[in-house]
Amino acid sequence: MAKKTLVVYLILSFLVSCEDKKSDTTQEESVQTELQKEIPVITTDTLKTIDFEHELISNGRIATSQKAELRFLAQSSSNVPVQIFVKNGDHVVAGAAIAMLDTFLLSNSCLQAENTLQKARLDLQEALIGQGYTIDDFAAASEEVMQLAQIRSGYNSAQIQYELAKYNLNNAILRSPISGTVSDLFSKPHSTINTSEPFCRIINQNALEVDFKILENELSMVKMGDKVKVQPYSLPGVVSQGQITNINPSVDADGTVRIKASVQADNNLFNGMNVRISVFRSLGKQWVVPKTAVVLRTGKQVVFACKDNKAAWHYVTTSLENATQYVITSETLKEGDEIIVTGNEHLADGSEVKKL
Image 1: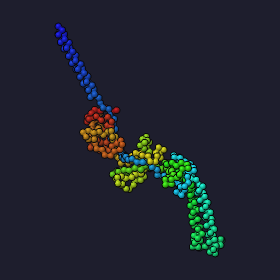
Image 2: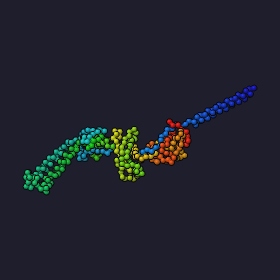
Image 3: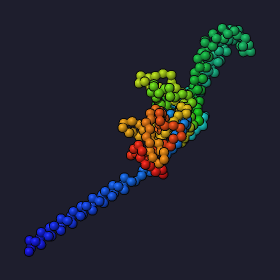
Image 4: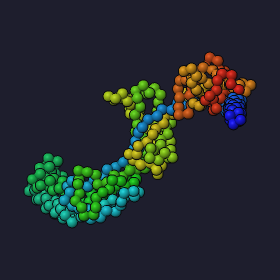
């Protein structure tokens, strides 16, 4: 009796297990059927001919087209700055005083040179009187006589030394020749001056330009006046506009051509800053589509068109491009076709679609 009960229990357990498996299989098939019935959601755009702006990407550096290096004269190298009137980042106007040297020695040299000149002037007068001229008719002396008298009296030499001493004294005050921003000022008051290096630089932040290079085979894609967009790598959110102002008519050993472009003034741009440059040039009317519209099928480029809520693929050929768009040609697409720009990742020819 116990054996019969055990056999019945085993049979019932087997039947229940089979029923569970059948239920699981049915549910799985139901889910797959639902997934197959899910219609892809797409967005579309109308294929039309528009002006295409080709974009050429390069790297470069910000520079200023107006910069001045300020130096103290080598003749004054024994002096030290007693005052510095500015600091890095200060804005100065043309003629503003930047720093001033100790003028004691320079003033003495100027006075000595002036005294020497006065003495030489007296010696010149004596030399002319010795030639028979009076003070009232020195101007009547011939050029040859006057030149000889100036040499003998030492007047010419004294005049040169006086002009030099006066020039050194006047240049004891270092002045900015242009309006701009002070940079590279590292000297301290009373420190020794190194006249082989600039004391500081003045940079005009309103006259910025960008210096970059393009490949030789890209030269046909740029011309004078083309628009550029400048974006610092350190400040991705900062964008400044400009245009090409200089194309160097020479190809260097690396096969590149040097280009310069003016840049709109921006307080976020600094001299020497590394930037990304985009050069834009209009290439006329083209079929232009977003890059997302072009997908690969069987190793070829395809654009899907939408008609009667169904996707139809069309083989295309891409040529020029910029950051977001392709120029395309196709033997089967036509002007006005509604092309699929998103939601086309897993489409096949004839797939049913639903527009967003």
